[in-house]
Image (cartoon, rainbow, N blue to C red):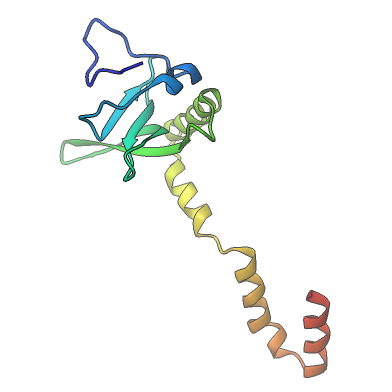
Length: 148
């Protein structure tokens, strides 16, 4: 199914389903195309041309940012690629993100904070340098031996 660059005004926006996403094709003259969902405002599919020429299909949510100097801005929050997120699961994730946005939460900031948390190996290294190395040599041997 070929999607025109702009839908005519009389044509409604499509419902983003697995069948629609599978058949969606990025026009050759475009590098990016955003298709909004007809049932859920703020939920969309982005078709984007990758460096190898193939198109990626990513679900996303639009977040309205507070106005600054009379200028309204939207932020795109990526939900995930269509290969790992079926349309129904992406829709459910989008709905929970949009509800969080309505209540004043920031899903993008929550994701960034989660990604910024240290990985378990880093915590072990920090524990070894800050705690184990302050113990007596005999205790260090016991603690290091029991870890492995």
